[in-house]
Image (cartoon, rainbow, N blue to C red; front, top):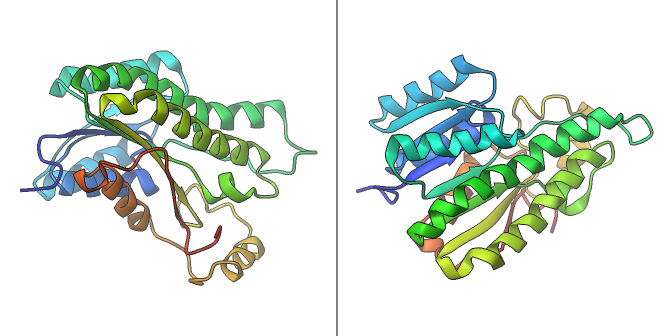
Length: 248
C-alpha cells in the first residue's frame, strides 16, 4: 500500500526539473498523476514512461497555466479523467533575469504571470472540488529568493514572495474544509530553469549555504511528498525552506 493510494495529484510544469521529480515521487507512493506541460510534449511523455514503468498511473495534459481559461481546463481534465482532485502542486515557473534598470515590462509580466498568476488560476479552479470533497493538499513551489531576495531577479523574487503570501492567505480561507496549503522554498537546484545563473553567482551562493552543495530535484520532491501526506495533516500555511541552510 502506498501512502497516496486512491489520491489524484496534479503537478504544473511537470515535464522537467522539480515538477518531473515530484510527479514521479507522488506516483511512486500510489497517487494517480496529471503531468501538466506547456510546450515540451516529448519530455512530458518521458515522465509518463517512467511512471508507467514503475507501475503507476498518469496522464499528460498540455496547458499554459498562466492563462486563466487553460488552467481551468487543466483542472477539469483531471476531474473528467479520475473524478476527483486531492493534491495540487503549483510548480510552473520561468525566469527573465536582469537588473531592474534593464528589465522590460514584458520581462516583469511574463514572470509574474507564469510564476504567480498561475498559482491563483489553478488554485481557484481546484478549490471548488476540494471544498466539496472536504479534503485537499496544495503545495506551492516558492524559492529561497522569495524569502531573502536576489539581485537581478526583482520579477522572480516578487513572484515567489507573492506566492508565500498567497499560501498563507488561502490556508486561512480553506483550513476549515480540511484543506492544507503550504509552500516549499528551494535553494539552488540545478535544473534547466536555473542553468542561466552565472558561475560566479553560483559559487557565492554555495559559500553562503552551510551544507556547501546544491540540492537536487528529488530533495524538493521529498518535501512535497511529506506535505501532501497524512503525516502532515496538521501543517498548513507554512514555508518549508529546502535550501541547505541558505536562508536561515
